[in-house]
Length: 527
Image (tube, rainbow, N blue to C red; front, side):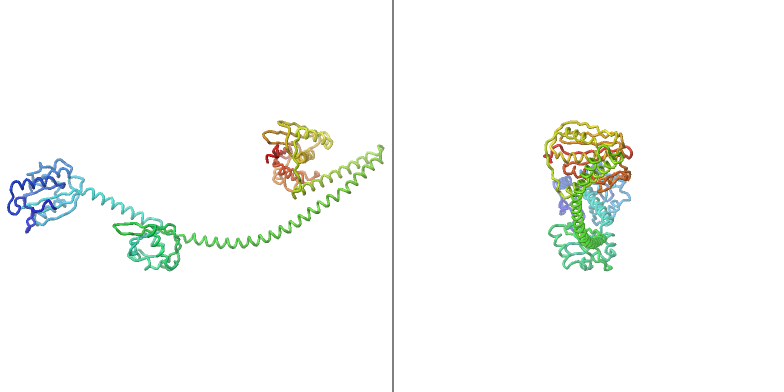
């Protein structure tokens, strides 16, 4: 303490305020008093009878209590501050008073929430005490201690394996429980040992540890680095390494976190193996499928060729049958019997049905091969449908009627033939599956660039279980098996709508009838 230089006897080390080099004048005494008052520490002098001889002004400041001021001068210490009795500071005061040897210690004040560094010196027949406020330092120390305790708790309880190593020496400073469990070591086997000395990199590529240290040195950290460690038992564990360089007390340390991905790695390897196996099987199946598709294509081409040839070949005998039938009707004249007329009608109906079937086959075959040519034209939809329904009336069953209504715009730009063919199929089905005297409703609407055609009947209806198959080739609902048909009509309607850029939908309930809706753009130029 510089401001006490010259106050100590060189032989005894005792503070002597009465004598400096054997003599002190009044000016020098006042200078010393002024010095003691100006220091930032608290200072007191106690005589051999424990009476306070001197108290500087900082005593009250440091101990934050007006009782501890110059008013203490002349009072016995133990009476003025009874809290000191039985405490460490009190014991040290007595020890220095007796041994005449100075002592220094740190203590929390017995009279205030203050930490002080206490220096006790012999002085004449008594003692002098210097108090330095170290509350901030002690609080920082406490915070550091708590922080270290929190870190230690988090470090030890972390689910990831963690280790702290000295960057310069490579020695392990600390490990948590999970690190020991993961590598099969006891903590005592790891502390102060080097990473290389443990042999945990034996399964890693040569120079792996040096490579990691170089990355940490250059970047300050390493993230998600996959490594393989060797456990104490000689097993391989696959890990994700996260490491960061930190500085503590002027030294560099590496804090490492390890996540075990061994099981994940095994699953990945198994997935790769299975994927390779699957790819091999897929290649085999693809080859089989390719061969099968080629065979199927050849069969389909043969079938299409047969259908096309057969359809054309059938047309000649059918035409011959119709012409012969016309001659028979002419030769029979008006006097032919009722039975003959009935047979003539049956023959004509059968020929018409067979012709319709052949037409359906040819239409479908053309569409599937992309041979159907779309010829768009501007026409009056209302007039065309009205004319068609009027021409269709002779084909209705006894008592059946068609009611047609139109709404909205009238002219559209589409393929008239395709529109009428699609509508014809729906009206034909409605008549076919409805009884005598039934009403078939046909409606058309053109609005907002969209055409909607609807055909509604009160016929058999489509059973719910059959509805999902209704657009399947040759499929017929089970309640319509006794009614003549091929199962091609709705497929053809669907293909027609696809050509027009539209679709076909329906609602139906068994024994209550069906409603089919065709929707397509009013102008083909929009698509």
